[in-house]
Length: 368
Image (tube, rainbow, N blue to C red):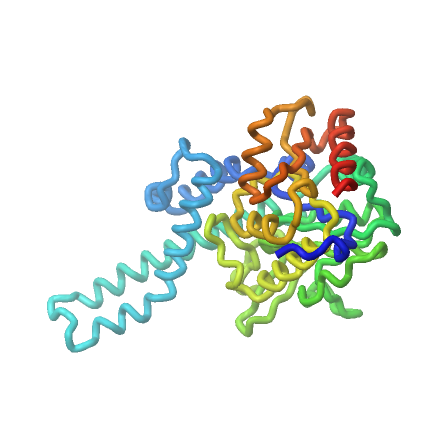
């Protein structure tokens, strides 16, 4: 549950989703439905029956794509890992004598190979779309993040704040550096250690200060890996997926993500929940809020819905909702008081309507 107000010493927790990075890259980082189109085409070329196997079609939306792909990926991983067990079970005394073990083994081998190719291509698509080498507009990013933080009153070397993102890319923290902030992701780099560095998210929240901003990649990141020993590490400028590097620390689209499956991810969420309990206010930018764990965190760790603002995309930065939308959003977030909805076209110059909405929200926060 949320702590008392006296513990709220962080000026802001900024939570970003795909919409925050989308228009800053060239070509644009894909939104979920656009990634579905790209991934579906890419994987169908690899294994023609893929779309039917997963249940993908052009008619499903982003959330349904995430649900279906998540179910398939979990089933595929379970299938591949159980191959040896199934083959050994055929040698048990009660196995049917008519079983053609050789034929079944060959079929399973071919099917497992196809599944492995699909998994590898899924990771490769993620690297292609969200890798560090993906070009983005530094000017647009600096203007967008800079004006947004200015409107909220976040100042470098004065304000204490944190950034959490479900994005795999590094646009936000790279932009923070250009703006003069000091992001820290838990990347421990040794002198002369080269491109490889250790990852450690334990106590990451304690780095929050006017001279340090913790960054939480809640779904992992391109360039992060877990090796066979369970060690987590990162590599700079990784543009191509290579299975020999280990398991990518990336939680792929799945509405039922297992946040405890990788210790680093579990630590990131624990530390993220810690900064939420200290936040005076929380701005959600470019996020669909189709993440159950995130909704639970906002419900349990924020004591008043007025502390939360949710930026909704508006091409003209004008109001695109009605009062009932605010009530429904409060219900979704589990709060009796409604959060503030802020119209924004992120990636373009901050409009007066957005600026005033952020100012009005800050006045509501000050009144709590």
